Amino acid sequence: MKRGRRPVEPAGILDAACRVFSRMGYFQATVDDVMCAAKVGKGTVYRHFSDKEGLLVALLARTAAELNDRVTSGLKSTGNLKESLTGVARATLDFFSARPALLRIFVREGTLTIPMVRRTMGSIIHQNNRRVAQVLGGRAGMRSAAVFNGMIFSLLRQKIGIGDEPIHPDRDAKFLVDIFLHGIRGKKA
Image (cartoon, rainbow, N blue to C red; front, side, top):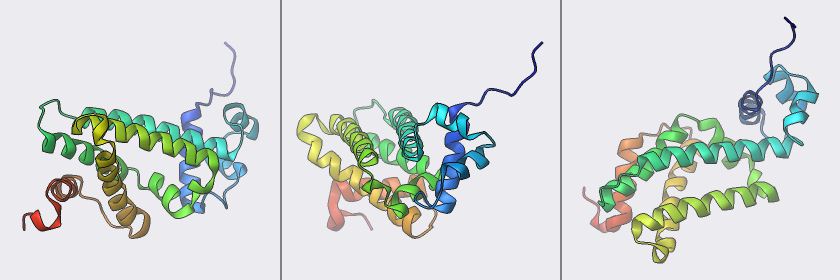
């Protein structure tokens, strides 16, 4: 039996990159920092990712896939608009409350100024908007879907990205849906 190093999975490198980028900041961190945190050689990192930006884009793509799965499972096919929207909001809030480092990388670091990151994030946002628009009745609901998703991410940005406040997925989701459906004046006290 041949002895050697265990194969390194890209997921472990991405987990290390997330920790490093969150702690040090994306722009201050280096591939060497990620390599040390992942306990792998530089060649291993570059075998899976082209550069530091490639690490960030891959981290974003993985996050998008995980969030997509979570939101899809949060959608209820009851036909009830309020329940469906609450499911989307709760799933998104729950996802990021368990992974605040991910949101901090994008909110605090200004990584959205990187063209590839901005394009990737734009495609993720568009996909989320399409899903919510279907709940709202199709293509005509795209503007409303963008507003709803914007409300969710604004709350996340405020609580995690800026304030380091806890998120309460059930309570916060109900609050957002109530304001979205009824407005501030129609909000139940």
